[in-house]
Length: 224
Image 1 (cartoon, helix red, strand yellow):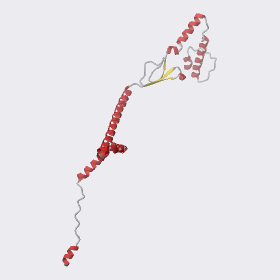
Image 2 (image 1 turned 135 degrees about the vertical axis):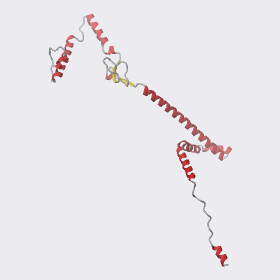
Image 3 (image 1 turned 45 degrees about the horizontal axis):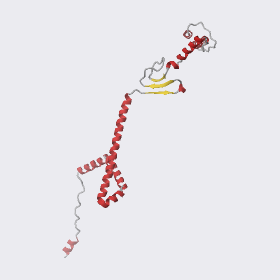
Image 4 (image 1 turned 90 degrees about the horizontal axis):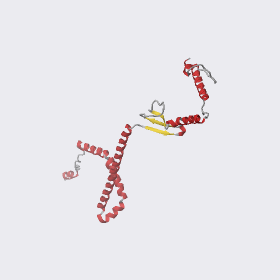
């Protein structure tokens, strides 16, 4: 009796717990799955989340279709429509962005090979066109050494220089015996100022007018 009682009161052994250790391949596969999910999160999870949001927005449509198709099929159909709409919109948007990128790249290559230039016409800055060219152009103005970079492009050069008006005034003075607007005395005064300027540059001193000299050329006063 004691033996039976003793045997009945002994604690029973707990069943062995299942092994929790996993094969290394399990963890490798899990890591690969997580990496794939994160790698494609933008392409898969974001559209899926948008589809879920659209499905909630289309819940009235689910209730309407539920009468005819049942709850499960109505939800599945709305989810399919939402995912298709998001996927289609994403595809079209991606195509548009790719086409725009291709056009921008092509345009950039075209502009890179194309000579660059710009021109400004402003009468407050004079009667020439302020022009910039990266490679230069044919003709800007008389005595312009180079047209690369900034230059002052003249238009109607003969007219703007006054040649036409000068010749017309000369013919009018000869024909009608008129006094020219600019006389020989004016030209003499200009030469006097030029000679005085060279004399000042050569001596480093101030030169007063009127100025008289026996030099044949202004440069002779500078070299003296």
